[in-house]
Length: 288
Image 1 (cartoon, one colour):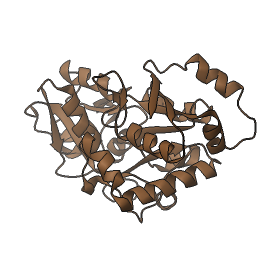
Image 2 (tube, rainbow, N blue to C red):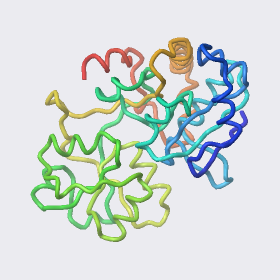
Image 3 (cartoon, rainbow, N blue to C red):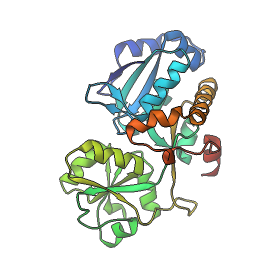
Image 4 (tube, rainbow, N blue to C red):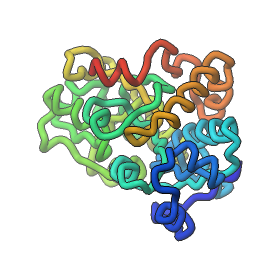
């Protein structure tokens, strides 16, 4: 699988021309097969999609999308790294054929885009400076100790924080986890909350020994009053039914055959991180 990508998040000229001159009315899956590549948006977020030591695009979603495309006879992927909050607008605008950023299936997002069935399941976790100086292990601690909580723009965590009573003046929004790390080190925040799988990868790739992952003693609750459990999936444009069906069919088989776990393990994910096969995007969008 050839993985070409633009590190700045800017559209490469050949990709823009392909979009402008593409076959009007052709479904996205057919277009991808005809042109021999897919345009995929990623956020620079470990373990989902990032630039590895070799300078190549790596990560969970890059590996899964690459394997799926190969199953469809497509040998190339044009990946673009961009800010998390920009992914959905860029998908809607036709800059990408699909997006892979460890994005959780959320009600507001279901109104904007379609999701494939979930690949992973995760609770929330904190990252703090090494030793967890303020001993923070729940949003209750954030509130009681008047600590500053970092969240990523466009993520579900700000909603969780507000729903669970964290005052706005204790919430600091960052464009991505890379800038959150700088915020922790500069004492702008005391903790960041994100999906535990992402926090695990975030702490590992920072690789300076000054950050810790903190498992929460009490999970935040969502709008339904139940502990907030995240289900992550690939995002598609609404109406791309053939592409979504092909992806879901591949994902279902990959779960059953063990291929999904094999693809995930190099990035630190385990069998317990894989979403159950009976949980679908349709059911999650309808019930959340």
